[in-house]
Image (cartoon, rainbow, N blue to C red; front, side):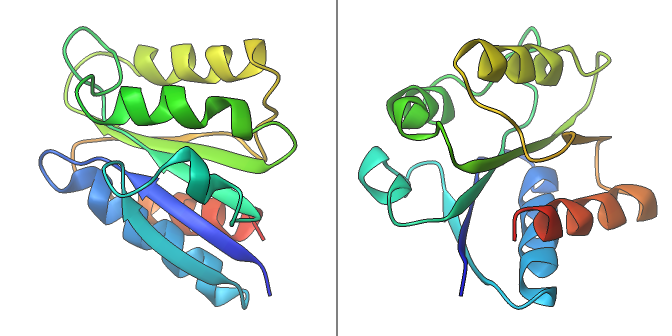
Length: 140
């Protein structure tokens, strides 16, 4: 059975809700999903999962959360080549620049994403909910 990690940071609960939906998608196709906050995940854990979904909202001037998520991301980045990886997150302003930058940084690091990222403005609507579930399925 595939073991999938859903790793996220959430300030308002919107990205956490997205993480739960990604985990639902994983479970709906028979894989095991573990939800972990950025503070709970580490480079050592990355090796124990077949695939990983990373979720982080847009912060500040369209960047990843800097005190917890970014340091975790930087530490696990070398372990991600060859793994199925997807990205998701919510935003309250802007147009998704943080996610495009994150996706580009993945490519420059040699990480191929399993499918397109999912973003939503504030809480996920019905379309974003279904896209999050599909993201989870894409990891299996």
